[in-house]
Length: 326
Image (tube, rainbow, N blue to C red):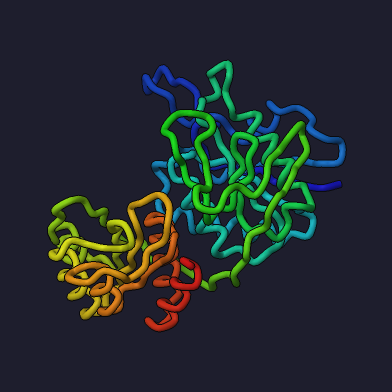
Protein backbone atom coordinates (compact mmCIF):
# COMPACT_ATOMS: atom_id res chain seq x y z
CA UNK A 1 0.00 0.00 0.00
CA UNK A 2 1.24 3.51 -0.85
CA UNK A 3 1.82 5.60 2.27
CA UNK A 4 1.57 9.40 2.13
CA UNK A 5 2.42 11.64 5.10
CA UNK A 6 0.54 14.94 5.46
CA UNK A 7 2.88 17.32 7.26
CA UNK A 8 0.83 20.23 8.60
CA UNK A 9 2.10 23.73 9.36
CA UNK A 10 -1.16 25.69 9.77
CA UNK A 11 -2.48 28.37 7.44
CA UNK A 12 -5.98 29.10 6.16
CA UNK A 13 -6.65 25.43 5.47
CA UNK A 14 -6.31 24.85 9.24
CA UNK A 15 -8.07 28.04 10.36
CA UNK A 16 -11.42 28.75 11.97
CA UNK A 17 -12.99 31.74 13.64
CA UNK A 18 -11.86 32.13 17.24
CA UNK A 19 -14.12 34.04 19.63
CA UNK A 20 -11.12 34.49 21.93
CA UNK A 21 -9.12 36.29 19.25
CA UNK A 22 -12.12 37.85 17.49
CA UNK A 23 -10.65 36.77 14.17
CA UNK A 24 -9.72 33.75 12.07
CA UNK A 25 -6.70 31.86 13.42
CA UNK A 26 -4.91 28.61 12.62
CA UNK A 27 -6.23 26.08 15.13
CA UNK A 28 -7.24 22.86 13.29
CA UNK A 29 -4.98 19.87 13.93
CA UNK A 30 -3.45 17.74 11.20
CA UNK A 31 -5.38 14.64 12.21
CA UNK A 32 -8.66 16.49 11.85
CA UNK A 33 -7.68 17.75 8.38
CA UNK A 34 -6.98 14.23 7.17
CA UNK A 35 -10.03 12.71 8.89
CA UNK A 36 -12.32 15.26 7.22
CA UNK A 37 -11.52 13.84 3.79
CA UNK A 38 -12.77 10.32 4.31
CA UNK A 39 -11.36 7.50 2.16
CA UNK A 40 -9.75 8.61 -1.10
CA UNK A 41 -8.55 5.41 -2.72
CA UNK A 42 -8.27 1.95 -1.16
CA UNK A 43 -4.56 1.62 -2.04
CA UNK A 44 -3.34 4.87 -0.39
CA UNK A 45 -2.67 5.10 3.34
CA UNK A 46 -2.58 8.65 4.70
CA UNK A 47 -1.05 9.59 8.05
CA UNK A 48 -0.41 13.03 9.49
CA UNK A 49 2.26 14.83 11.48
CA UNK A 50 1.95 18.33 12.88
CA UNK A 51 5.05 20.47 12.32
CA UNK A 52 3.42 23.73 13.48
CA UNK A 53 0.05 25.44 13.53
CA UNK A 54 0.49 29.08 12.55
CA UNK A 55 -0.34 31.41 9.69
CA UNK A 56 2.42 31.37 7.09
CA UNK A 57 3.03 35.08 7.61
CA UNK A 58 4.62 33.93 10.89
CA UNK A 59 7.09 31.55 9.18
CA UNK A 60 10.65 32.83 8.73
CA UNK A 61 13.60 31.47 6.77
CA UNK A 62 15.00 29.46 9.65
CA UNK A 63 11.64 27.79 10.33
CA UNK A 64 11.18 27.02 6.64
CA UNK A 65 14.67 25.49 6.62
CA UNK A 66 13.74 23.24 9.56
CA UNK A 67 10.58 22.25 7.67
CA UNK A 68 12.65 21.26 4.64
CA UNK A 69 14.97 19.24 6.87
CA UNK A 70 12.01 17.39 8.36
CA UNK A 71 10.67 16.65 4.87
CA UNK A 72 14.04 15.18 3.87
CA UNK A 73 14.09 13.01 7.00
CA UNK A 74 10.61 11.64 6.27
CA UNK A 75 11.50 10.91 2.66
CA UNK A 76 14.44 8.80 3.82
CA UNK A 77 11.91 6.28 5.20
CA UNK A 78 11.48 3.61 2.48
CA UNK A 79 7.90 3.06 3.60
CA UNK A 80 6.87 6.62 2.68
CA UNK A 81 6.03 7.24 -0.98
CA UNK A 82 5.48 10.99 -0.82
CA UNK A 83 4.80 14.02 1.36
CA UNK A 84 1.99 16.57 1.34
CA UNK A 85 2.67 19.82 3.20
CA UNK A 86 -0.30 21.96 4.21
CA UNK A 87 0.84 25.56 4.43
CA UNK A 88 -0.53 29.07 4.38
CA UNK A 89 -0.57 30.66 0.94
CA UNK A 90 1.18 33.91 1.94
CA UNK A 91 4.66 32.36 1.96
CA UNK A 92 3.97 28.93 0.49
CA UNK A 93 5.99 29.63 -2.64
CA UNK A 94 9.09 30.44 -0.57
CA UNK A 95 8.87 27.33 1.63
CA UNK A 96 8.19 25.16 -1.42
CA UNK A 97 11.14 26.60 -3.35
CA UNK A 98 13.46 26.27 -0.36
CA UNK A 99 12.45 22.61 -0.10
CA UNK A 100 12.94 22.16 -3.84
CA UNK A 101 16.52 23.49 -3.64
CA UNK A 102 17.41 20.96 -0.92
CA UNK A 103 15.41 18.01 -2.24
CA UNK A 104 17.59 14.94 -2.85
CA UNK A 105 14.79 12.43 -3.45
CA UNK A 106 12.63 11.63 -6.48
CA UNK A 107 9.62 11.11 -4.20
CA UNK A 108 6.92 13.77 -4.66
CA UNK A 109 6.69 16.64 -2.19
CA UNK A 110 3.45 18.57 -2.65
CA UNK A 111 2.52 21.85 -0.96
CA UNK A 112 -1.11 22.87 -0.74
CA UNK A 113 -3.47 24.98 1.34
CA UNK A 114 -6.63 27.06 1.03
CA UNK A 115 -7.84 30.57 0.42
CA UNK A 116 -11.16 30.04 2.24
CA UNK A 117 -10.92 29.00 5.89
CA UNK A 118 -12.42 25.81 7.30
CA UNK A 119 -15.60 27.48 8.63
CA UNK A 120 -16.68 28.62 5.19
CA UNK A 121 -19.21 26.29 3.52
CA UNK A 122 -17.37 26.41 0.18
CA UNK A 123 -13.84 26.11 1.57
CA UNK A 124 -11.34 24.99 -1.06
CA UNK A 125 -9.17 23.22 1.52
CA UNK A 126 -10.61 19.68 1.33
CA UNK A 127 -10.46 19.51 -2.48
CA UNK A 128 -6.93 20.91 -2.56
CA UNK A 129 -5.76 18.46 0.09
CA UNK A 130 -7.35 15.49 -1.65
CA UNK A 131 -5.79 16.53 -4.97
CA UNK A 132 -2.39 17.01 -3.34
CA UNK A 133 -2.53 13.50 -1.86
CA UNK A 134 -3.39 12.08 -5.28
CA UNK A 135 -0.40 13.85 -6.82
CA UNK A 136 1.94 12.76 -4.02
CA UNK A 137 0.84 9.15 -4.56
CA UNK A 138 1.22 9.22 -8.34
CA UNK A 139 4.15 7.78 -10.25
CA UNK A 140 3.86 10.63 -12.75
CA UNK A 141 4.92 13.16 -10.10
CA UNK A 142 8.18 11.40 -9.23
CA UNK A 143 11.28 13.40 -10.09
CA UNK A 144 9.47 16.72 -10.50
CA UNK A 145 10.87 18.24 -7.31
CA UNK A 146 8.72 20.19 -4.89
CA UNK A 147 5.29 21.07 -6.26
CA UNK A 148 2.36 23.32 -5.45
CA UNK A 149 -1.08 21.80 -6.06
CA UNK A 150 -3.90 24.31 -5.91
CA UNK A 151 -7.19 24.79 -7.73
CA UNK A 152 -6.79 21.44 -9.56
CA UNK A 153 -3.46 22.58 -11.06
CA UNK A 154 0.08 21.28 -10.56
CA UNK A 155 2.88 23.85 -10.48
CA UNK A 156 6.64 23.65 -10.07
CA UNK A 157 7.77 25.30 -6.84
CA UNK A 158 10.35 27.38 -8.73
CA UNK A 159 7.76 28.92 -11.03
CA UNK A 160 4.59 29.26 -8.96
CA UNK A 161 3.57 32.51 -7.33
CA UNK A 162 0.50 33.75 -5.48
CA UNK A 163 -1.41 36.02 -7.87
CA UNK A 164 -4.56 37.05 -5.98
CA UNK A 165 -5.03 37.96 -2.33
CA UNK A 166 -8.31 36.08 -1.86
CA UNK A 167 -9.56 34.14 -4.89
CA UNK A 168 -9.28 30.37 -4.81
CA UNK A 169 -7.41 30.10 -8.12
CA UNK A 170 -4.48 32.11 -6.85
CA UNK A 171 -1.33 30.23 -7.91
CA UNK A 172 0.07 30.58 -11.41
CA UNK A 173 3.33 29.91 -13.21
CA UNK A 174 3.32 32.98 -15.41
CA UNK A 175 6.49 32.50 -17.43
CA UNK A 176 6.54 28.74 -17.96
CA UNK A 177 3.03 27.47 -17.28
CA UNK A 178 1.63 24.75 -15.07
CA UNK A 179 3.01 21.21 -15.10
CA UNK A 180 -0.36 19.51 -15.17
CA UNK A 181 -3.75 19.19 -13.56
CA UNK A 182 -6.08 16.92 -11.61
CA UNK A 183 -9.26 16.08 -13.49
CA UNK A 184 -11.99 13.82 -12.10
CA UNK A 185 -9.54 12.47 -9.55
CA UNK A 186 -6.85 11.60 -12.10
CA UNK A 187 -3.41 13.23 -12.25
CA UNK A 188 -2.30 14.50 -15.66
CA UNK A 189 1.28 15.76 -16.13
CA UNK A 190 1.81 17.65 -19.40
CA UNK A 191 5.43 18.79 -18.98
CA UNK A 192 8.42 18.05 -16.77
CA UNK A 193 10.87 20.39 -15.12
CA UNK A 194 14.63 20.52 -15.63
CA UNK A 195 16.00 19.39 -12.28
CA UNK A 196 19.27 20.83 -10.98
CA UNK A 197 21.48 19.13 -8.41
CA UNK A 198 20.30 19.84 -4.84
CA UNK A 199 22.19 22.40 -2.80
CA UNK A 200 24.26 21.17 0.12
CA UNK A 201 23.61 23.57 2.98
CA UNK A 202 23.66 22.80 6.68
CA UNK A 203 22.13 26.11 7.68
CA UNK A 204 20.44 29.18 6.27
CA UNK A 205 21.52 32.83 6.58
CA UNK A 206 18.47 34.92 7.50
CA UNK A 207 20.18 38.32 7.07
CA UNK A 208 19.30 38.76 3.39
CA UNK A 209 17.10 41.71 2.44
CA UNK A 210 14.96 42.49 -0.60
CA UNK A 211 14.85 46.10 -1.75
CA UNK A 212 12.08 46.97 -4.20
CA UNK A 213 12.82 49.90 -6.46
CA UNK A 214 10.31 52.61 -7.32
CA UNK A 215 10.64 55.83 -9.24
CA UNK A 216 13.26 58.00 -7.56
CA UNK A 217 14.48 55.39 -5.06
CA UNK A 218 17.47 56.61 -3.11
CA UNK A 219 20.03 54.53 -1.19
CA UNK A 220 18.53 54.81 2.31
CA UNK A 221 17.03 51.33 2.50
CA UNK A 222 20.14 49.73 1.05
CA UNK A 223 22.45 51.55 3.44
CA UNK A 224 20.21 50.81 6.43
CA UNK A 225 20.19 47.11 5.53
CA UNK A 226 23.99 47.04 5.47
CA UNK A 227 24.30 49.06 8.68
CA UNK A 228 22.03 46.59 10.48
CA UNK A 229 23.93 43.48 9.44
CA UNK A 230 22.66 42.35 6.04
CA UNK A 231 24.98 39.78 4.47
CA UNK A 232 23.22 39.84 1.13
CA UNK A 233 20.91 42.12 -0.85
CA UNK A 234 18.37 41.37 -3.57
CA UNK A 235 17.37 44.30 -5.74
CA UNK A 236 13.89 44.03 -7.22
CA UNK A 237 14.88 46.35 -10.01
CA UNK A 238 13.18 47.98 -12.98
CA UNK A 239 12.58 46.09 -16.22
CA UNK A 240 15.71 44.28 -17.39
CA UNK A 241 17.49 44.91 -14.10
CA UNK A 242 18.05 48.64 -13.89
CA UNK A 243 18.29 50.79 -10.78
CA UNK A 244 18.29 54.48 -10.04
CA UNK A 245 21.78 56.02 -10.16
CA UNK A 246 21.78 56.44 -6.36
CA UNK A 247 20.93 52.78 -5.73
CA UNK A 248 23.42 51.60 -8.36
CA UNK A 249 26.20 53.63 -6.75
CA UNK A 250 25.44 52.22 -3.29
CA UNK A 251 25.08 48.68 -4.62
CA UNK A 252 28.43 48.89 -6.41
CA UNK A 253 30.04 50.03 -3.17
CA UNK A 254 28.40 47.12 -1.32
CA UNK A 255 29.81 44.61 -3.82
CA UNK A 256 33.25 46.15 -3.41
CA UNK A 257 32.92 45.59 0.36
CA UNK A 258 32.23 41.88 -0.19
CA UNK A 259 28.43 41.96 0.14
CA UNK A 260 26.47 39.75 -2.23
CA UNK A 261 24.09 41.72 -4.43
CA UNK A 262 21.59 39.99 -6.73
CA UNK A 263 19.43 41.63 -9.36
CA UNK A 264 15.86 40.60 -10.24
CA UNK A 265 12.99 42.36 -11.99
CA UNK A 266 9.87 43.83 -10.46
CA UNK A 267 8.08 42.76 -13.67
CA UNK A 268 6.10 39.54 -13.13
CA UNK A 269 7.44 38.08 -16.40
CA UNK A 270 10.72 38.21 -18.30
CA UNK A 271 14.35 37.93 -17.27
CA UNK A 272 16.99 40.42 -16.23
CA UNK A 273 20.02 41.14 -18.44
CA UNK A 274 22.80 43.76 -18.13
CA UNK A 275 21.97 45.90 -21.15
CA UNK A 276 21.63 49.53 -20.06
CA UNK A 277 24.50 51.71 -18.83
CA UNK A 278 24.71 55.18 -17.26
CA UNK A 279 23.77 53.79 -13.85
CA UNK A 280 21.65 50.92 -15.15
CA UNK A 281 22.01 47.16 -15.07
CA UNK A 282 25.22 47.06 -17.10
CA UNK A 283 27.02 49.02 -14.35
CA UNK A 284 25.68 46.65 -11.68
CA UNK A 285 26.89 43.59 -13.61
CA UNK A 286 30.30 45.15 -14.24
CA UNK A 287 30.72 45.62 -10.50
CA UNK A 288 29.89 41.95 -9.81
CA UNK A 289 26.16 41.94 -9.05
CA UNK A 290 24.51 38.58 -9.84
CA UNK A 291 21.75 38.64 -12.46
CA UNK A 292 19.20 35.93 -11.60
CA UNK A 293 17.29 35.40 -14.83
CA UNK A 294 13.54 35.14 -14.36
CA UNK A 295 13.67 34.10 -10.69
CA UNK A 296 11.51 36.29 -8.46
CA UNK A 297 13.02 38.50 -5.78
CA UNK A 298 11.45 36.46 -2.96
CA UNK A 299 12.89 33.21 -4.32
CA UNK A 300 16.26 34.79 -5.11
CA UNK A 301 16.41 35.73 -1.43
CA UNK A 302 15.79 32.09 -0.47
CA UNK A 303 18.50 30.92 -2.86
CA UNK A 304 21.02 33.47 -1.60
CA UNK A 305 20.23 32.67 2.04
CA UNK A 306 20.91 28.98 1.42
CA UNK A 307 24.12 29.68 -0.48
CA UNK A 308 25.41 31.98 2.25
CA UNK A 309 24.51 29.34 4.83
CA UNK A 310 26.45 26.70 2.90
CA UNK A 311 29.75 28.44 3.60
CA UNK A 312 30.72 28.27 -0.09
CA UNK A 313 33.22 30.76 -1.46
CA UNK A 314 32.06 33.78 -3.48
CA UNK A 315 32.78 32.30 -6.96
CA UNK A 316 30.77 29.16 -6.10
CA UNK A 317 27.87 31.21 -4.78
CA UNK A 318 27.81 33.35 -7.92
CA UNK A 319 27.93 30.29 -10.17
CA UNK A 320 25.15 28.46 -8.32
CA UNK A 321 22.89 31.50 -8.17
CA UNK A 322 23.26 32.10 -11.90
CA UNK A 323 22.62 28.42 -12.59
CA UNK A 324 19.42 28.30 -10.55
CA UNK A 325 18.21 31.71 -11.72
CA UNK A 326 18.64 30.80 -15.38
